[in-house]
Image (cartoon, rainbow, N blue to C red; front, side):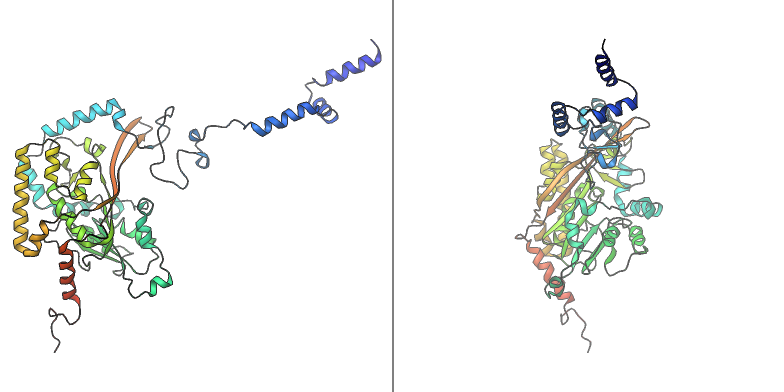
Length: 445
């Protein structure tokens, strides 16, 4: 072997030397051939480096299972996902879980056969305000969480609380923006709205059936009596009287968050009428409540079933669980009795309820005059802006438990072009009582 061949062999071997020094020296002195360099550049351009799938990542900045900014309803349980990886999943249908479906059916059957006694049913129905007073006596504002998600779920509330332009502020025809919250509780809706308010003309009427709840709101450090006013008011007030300071047809938005379910089915029609009369044409209802099949319904034990989907809690307060089509019927004017007949309920029970409603209507008419009797024949027909089922699967990862929750959420609008005849009558009556110079005012002379 010649010296030249030996030198060539040593150079070739040095390319495979495991020594870092040798590798560095070889790379520094021997650049890749043009063909190899071109191939490297092509790979770098077209091939992405492998990463952990974004929906498997626990890094909040790289996690498609949680939108940014966060939006409710954005985490879907898909094939291949580990159900116990996150605390909650959206839009999970419990019918896909055979074990839970069979458990639900058994529970509902058990509840029906172990209903509330007639004595207790009358006791809980006689004075429902008493039970809510007891509830708020034991559960103060520390028991509830502020509903900071309201503006995100109901953008119309953002419109009411936004700052007004100079032209809007100086417009003499522009009145106040009025929000009527019914079932205000301890103020966990009203005060978050007030905290983000930039509208100097906003007035929030926070009303509740319970005097104790109203007392909690009035004692709150943010309560000023100017932009927020708390009053005791029954949503199903038979006489149709609105809360103090609320003029018929003056409210921009009515907020009903977990309040409609506290009414008995016989009260729904009157409650809808009262909301209708409070709203201005084009005004909206922001609605959220319990949905049928919710875990809270399935969990009820014996002695809590009042009637189908209607229960009494251990603290004496009552709760109803709604279906989507049922709510559409309630807010668009479809009568409950007809709905029950379509669902195949006993005809005798339907007839009995119709007779009861007729008696209540006649009684209400005799107490408030011919105008009220005529009004009973008119049915408010709200437009359904949106209405849907909000399902959520909550997960206890430590105990490996699954909990199916179900709520109903929607927006209902009073049509711009449609007003009940009694709206005009009520507005005229209100004006006569409040305009200076009215015959109802005492003559100062």
